[in-house]
Length: 269
Ligand SMILES: [Zn+2]
Image 1 (cartoon, rainbow, N blue to C red):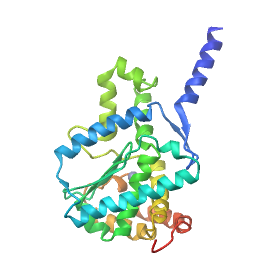
Image 2: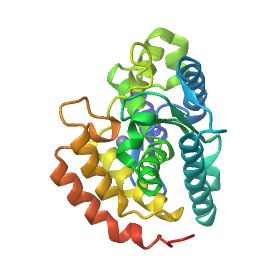
Image 3: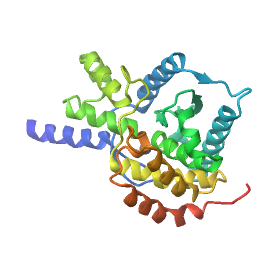
């Protein structure tokens, strides 16, 4: 009897712990309530902004562009989700797009839609459409809750698979530590650890689609990755290059995704 009940309990836990993303169709480990994670991320993002050189979009063309491109893609994605009857999946998202004065060629997104683009990236993106493809990639990470998945894997690995609320109550220091590791908080604030290969490819694919939906040419993604690879030679690679096996294979992947993204692309929108 005990075993039977335990079996039901375990089955229920697994059901609760995994969620299938309605866009990608992929089942993801999800031990942390997204609302909880978004509130932790918001707190960390605020702290990051006060400790960083944020470029004001009023009076700076680049910062204005970052905000404009981000908002255009967020609007396109929101409309797409509404059309699919998935508006509720965007609950709690409050998109923010800030340009940070920092020579690193970096960009990242935290849960709930908190995005940072570093000025060091702009000489490599060169044009607005290429920037849109990077931002589409980062928006996809936030949208598909890759941060939640990574943190859930961290919790599970440390035997804290009961969920964040319980973990917080029992081992607050350990839970905060896992969040910090998952989001690069601490000595390297804002330097996110690489996502897994599946997550990166997902973000590449949908990043191009989301950019295209907002009226940006997804072809720019391919030229951009060539420039990124050249620019990162010998340096620490940025988030979106860090987990890919080789430039050649990634370029082939992007080329494979291009026809699908082009279906959504209406130039001059
Ligand atoms: Zn990425």
